[in-house]
Image 1 (tube, each protein chain N blue to C red):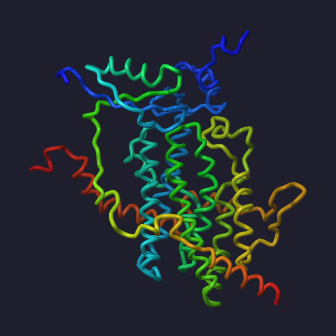
Image 2 (cartoon, helix red, strand yellow; image 1 turned 90 degrees about the vertical axis):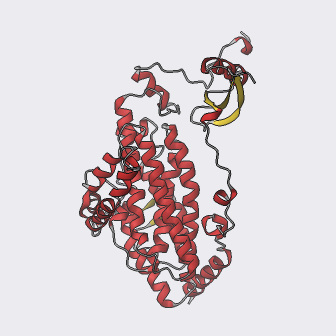
Image 3 (cartoon, rainbow over the protein chains, first blue to last red; image 1 turned 60 degrees about the vertical axis):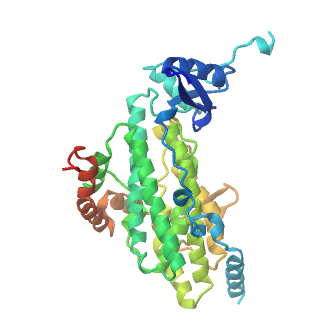
Length: 101
Length: 320
């Protein structure tokens, strides 16, 4: 790769209000040309509402599994960590029997 | 003319030019979205800021009633779940203050206004907690009342707020499960535990019914016209009642309102008029726990001043 080339990551927003989603990247010597390439690759059919063009070296990456997926039980942080089916049935039965008394 | 010969705008909405407020309001009034770096009229920016700032304040103040119960949680798992919920809520405040900052008000100014009582937070966080049952009722029903309005905010015309609400709603759904699980466990326990849940519900029902605010005239509600919010106060309260009244009653709990009933003919819930004077008094800092909660925040803010000084001070100060 010659010294005047840089990689630019391209993010696209499909419709108004959507999140910016990574689409791919382009190779261009400067911001202006990167913008034209991104437009041709990811917007020429009108399929993008907005593009973000970010120099790859401006991206900070975190992929350390010790930080992102530590080996501890996280079930209390997720809806599936609470199994209420049997508790709910028991409470409803009690309420129904008390109402009938 | 063939359809293929017609040039259609990308999303069916005409674009608006910078400075054209009329076209901007036509845009947001027909479901259009606005991003942080888009041009927007000053009154729209101020309205979104006020709305989001109040929401952020509520998330920050809302953890204080629950914080009181971390050390008194009955099991380790309940302590983990409660601590985790509190972390989530403070995280929501961080996300929302970030959205608000982009609208032009520095975070320090927002915190100062909150501490000085110049801005508001939700009525339900101005009350004290009395028992572990409050933890269940707050996480289940206060969060449920909140999520009803938060789900509607996922359609906000201000897109950064709408996207933030998607993450927040996902986390709130866990809190509701945690709260419902606490309530169910107590309802399947002893008579004393069931009485605690009923007593907590009796105390929280009034504030819950006030939480969405008095019915407003939709014709005069700018937040509604501009798409900042998608539903009015009464719609939100009706939605909350429709989902949660049956879930409360099926457990054998009583709702302390003799006039509460679903009217088949009108398709809406009827209820005793909530105490709007109490709501107004409470949110202006005259609730039973308003001042103690604010004082806790002021003390906490003063205690952590050194962190902000270190992080936000001159770059070389930390080295010296």
